[in-house]
Image (cartoon, rainbow, N blue to C red; front, side):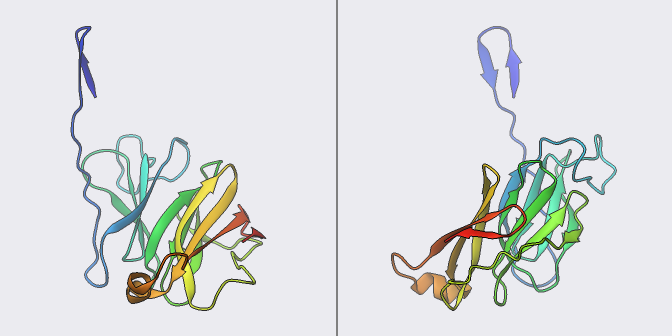
Length: 176
């Protein structure tokens, strides 16, 4: 945004290219803002070298942007398909909703390395065939929305065919 004089405000458009891979589904599906300037370094050697925005992609990649017009792939999980992304309250961990296979929440630390938590993001009463579809950190709790697996399952889903679970930031089930 630029401000000129006392009465005029205008916005400056910015388009950021999200990297794609040679195979598999493409397209960014989740985005978080990172206000912590000491977490999530961007591997492009850019101006400040820390991500301002981080993106999850259907191709199983996590990309980050700090400056310029291109995001840079920071992590790739073979076989994953990310449909949502969240960042924890401390802005030191990412939670990616992976709807591939039986579904999971993949967690990355502030250097984009995969981490294992004490909890497993498992709801003991989750209906069969449901996988994570989105994820959000609200007040230090991780909310995971679930939908029927696969594109065809979601297209055929009727009202009420979904559920939301709450976990702590360590992946321990709180309530469903």
